[in-house]
Length: 421
Image: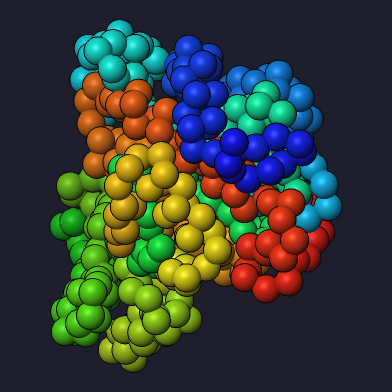
């Protein structure tokens, strides 16, 4: 039997497909349990317990790491022979279900399986991808596979809120290290090597309240905000003129504005937020400097302007070398499993993968079941076939990269062992 020899067995695409097929009921049942457990951002503790029990059941020891009580991150490592570390990264939190979801298929947390679909909020973004990585480890372990290296499962909280209590916390403590990896955000099983960066910020402008009949006695925070916002919109128009081949232009939008407490009172406070999308080649420092230049210009016009800035998200752009070993392994495995070439894509969203790549240098492309647009739909659903295909791809990728063959290395150079947490 041809294939990649690991721990005395051979693993090839056919073996992986048979192993996943034999465990289909358990693989789907796990996703259903996770979907039945609500985990809107800020409330990830319950789903972390469900996932931890599954990880224990496949013989690994889960570790909880919290930046804030009740906001768990979950890590577990499958250790084999000395060698490189492969990192799976996914998040446990999901968007709040849209209005009307309670009317569809038993509600947003049903986990119902029907007609080749599985229903539930977060199925696409990204509980299926996260569960798929854990099931890939289970499949390989039960096949008798022994990796030359290790596989680190990282299940984070707070991703939809910028990752401050999740991936950023783990990276800050040095708990995510490795040689190569994969993030399972939804891409409809296309390979994502590049995505835009994000800079989001909230601005608070302080004024002084007064009755609307005596405006001279107050300081109108809303009026002061309008001048700043106009300057930011003008910056956004200038950004639209910067066309980057293959990407289009960077963008800046003012997305929220809240001011005042009553219709007959001058606003004593105004709060607005912005969303700035970076294209590859731009840095957060450059983007922030342009924004701050607008604010400084407004301060020159209005020396009494009192403004506080809060950064909400500062996700870097993702850029993965297309010739890296992880990319080659995924593309070869996909073709062997699916019988067709793997499509590539680009996206204008952020991910935890970009923070990991920036912080550690490891190549971590993105490939996952589902699509982001479906993640905010009423009656959210995911194709079970696509979910199972993801498990196959993840398992075969690990089997081929954590090889016992002499000279095998995820970076295309000499073998090396990575440090452990």
